[in-house]
Length: 234
Ligand SMILES: *Cc1c(COP(=O)(O)O)cnc(C)c1O
Image 1: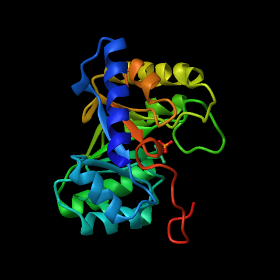
Image 2: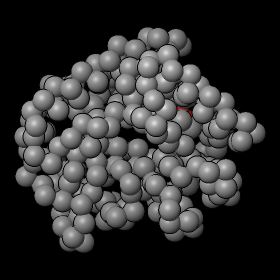
Image 3: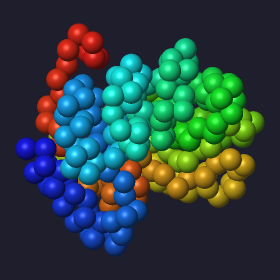
Image 4: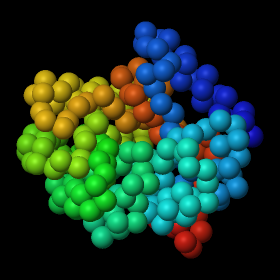
């Protein structure tokens, strides 16, 4: 099943790239393995998957310890400042930086270890109450402030679009995130580039690619429905 799912998603990515005149290698598929046991992640690994997304610190670190070290781990969930120390140095990219206080805490841990941490700025484009992320109008201030942090490299923007029946309804959300990234890029700010646009999930990654996504985060479409247990609920 996993193999077929991966092939299907891969095909859809390719088609979306073709439709929008983009090259396949502009888009990275992140397989969102949250709630899935290590054995399933191993199976995906054996099929060639190297980029996985997790939304809980404990789950990410457990899988990091258990699995091969050439995996790129993407932290895509809300991050508490007191937990950064557990994942620092283990992530290829933290997608979910949503406040300058969080960036400051990452800077502190990164400086201790003398490493540079790649991050994305999470933006709540659609303004949903229930979602984390900076408001679009807070971006400029964040970009000003984050330049003070020498151990952080901002690589782009991330958004979680609303759940919609028709993925076309999220097209404007994706286009808006892209526009925000073009505006920031134009500032030529120190330690900031906008090469990554992390947007699109199982329900709408094709539309996100058409609107410029360079990373899509697909969970259910690859691994099937999630398995919530007491340790990873919520
Ligand atoms: C769970 C999750 C995904 C994957 O969602 P699916 O709809 O299962 O593809 C993507 N991004 C984030 C931030 C998530 O938490």
